[in-house]
Length: 40
Length: 131
Image (cartoon, rainbow over the protein chains, first blue to last red):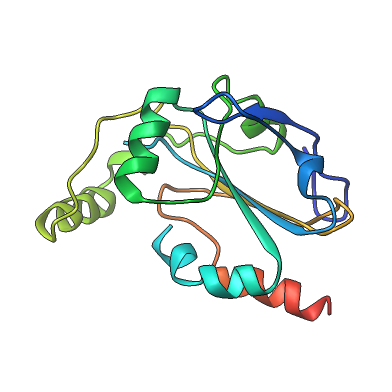
């Protein structure tokens, strides 16, 4: 499991429209990844 | 999420990019985005692989349905929050990961209960302190 001070885990995930999003898209910015519980 | 949205101007002013991640289906994601008006991108991790890699755990039945949790759900319903359709996995918990501009993890939080989230102020403080 990744922990503070370690490199973030790379990902490539689609959104609901099929557009791909990668971790490195926003290198140069702080990023907050918010993992949801179920959306219901 | 409400706390996060309330601080959206501050997050933006500090250059913090927010990305939401769900393990639910594309149709549920579309319903959520249109229903809440949230403009942050909602990314689909349908097999919850990234959840697992970041150590986001699962709640047991007692955590989900203990008297305090049930009272909280009842309170939300009585104060006008309508429960939505259950998603794929009620037990999957969420969490938060804050990465710095170089791609290093500066904060990691795996929720221990459905209501356990970090304070947005604490995340903002980490960014501010880094200068």
